[in-house]
Image (cartoon, rainbow, N blue to C red; front, side, top):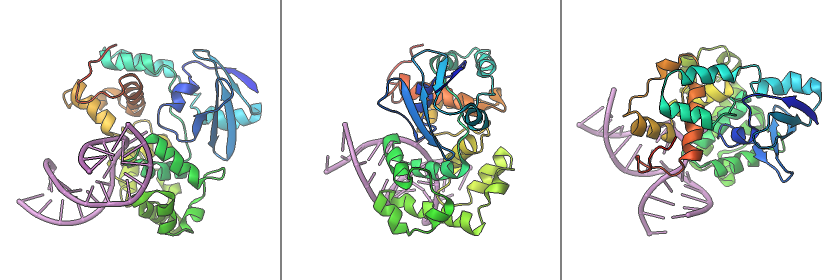
Length: 271
DNA sequence: CTGCAGGCCCTTA
DNA sequence: TAAGGGCCTGCA
């Protein structure tokens, strides 16, 4: 295990932020495991501690995990920018999710994960993704080699055909991940929406979590509920030009974990 | 038994 | 452009 001291970092909060489906707490005390980028990593961190332990070499940490956990970005600056807006709800959200980070996940894995996530709950999404892995996430070629029935039998339901079509699209080159990586956020969203099963929300999730374009702002039922109940349907993302996706993550995490179960403003906001 | 979970597609008007 | 129904599956 190597030790790092990291500000604005809580592996527990990141694991419960819903952005990643293969980062989970394990039986060892204060320990999480993530399988990503062809590696298996254990992370240990006591509550509220800035000391974080990783079971990997310094070389692996520098070459892979520094980037993956977005450790080069100064979240203190981001938080100050958000707080400077004098928005009580956002201030509370940033305070609550003090250790959140935007993970830089694998693009292909995120495309499949985001499609799987539509009209689905997180525990089931995790189970479905896990069924595809052994232990690493399969390539597009591997997924394209299966039939639609294969995915239906695993429980993907109506998303089975979307999974297969997008895998085949990558295989035959009609979805070019290399080109996708070079596009701007709005271009990437537009490109992704060509493919069946990828709409506005899923495309923005792929842009945010898979392309690491932090200006992407996915609007799911939680974010929509926040905008409707707290902002009368008018939430101005232009206040956060270039990093609205990070703001979205604080909002989402706060609403889901602190105000769980609220519906149509039936529960009041308590800072 | 309904209702619904981090939507999307398709049809109408 | 907007609104509404249907969709796989599993769980409350």
